[in-house]
Image (tube, rainbow, N blue to C red; front, side, top):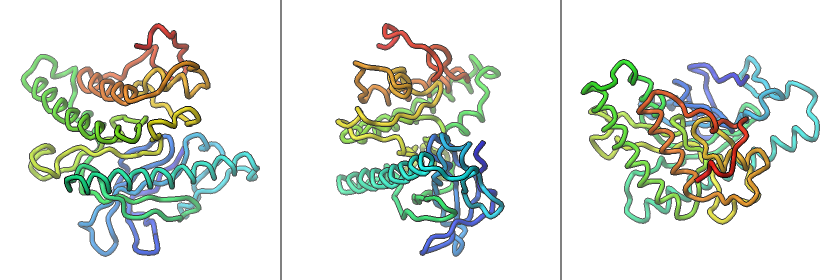
Length: 287
């Protein structure tokens, strides 16, 4: 199992120290923390640490926070970790590209601005500007759907969730001009706390985190897919298992993930069979 950095542990780049406040989420490629700058506690950042789930048995974190190999480093493990490092750098570049294009178009705050990428603790870290907030998963888990079913609070909850997902869909439409995200989950959508609710001003919109699985639109054939049970589209699951011959991964895979999030928000339950990564899927089940 991956172990995260503890609260108040620092992450140091050449420009500043980032102090861990809490974990924002965990994905296939690493762990994202909410951090503050040592020189200013009110200056917040989303800091993602490269710590691949695939290599969690080959890696471990020591008492100093460094990530080390748990067994004698062989060429295969080293090759995998180097691949993840290259992919991590590419993720940062994708985030920077999307943010830059969006700002040039109309200068709206639709995406978190990238700050830097650097090596520390024997791994890589990428940094995005942000403010205090919480993931969509934490936000949804504050509300118990089963206890409030058919109440006015439940209806208000659904309306607000739909507003969040409508905004997310508009952002996704922009991303889809060049890229597929391919890892949209409640962990990877971040809500900024504006002080007066999450949707009342331009700082209250949801933001996508973790572009580690992102792929250019025309380059999914050799892509390495990661899977989040209950949220990944069936065709992505098939591709991740080395199957899916004849299936084409396109924008609908991300739309499927948003609908799966809506299902979770409405029912309080994650989609189950035949949508788990260990399921055997019938081609006729995929629309």
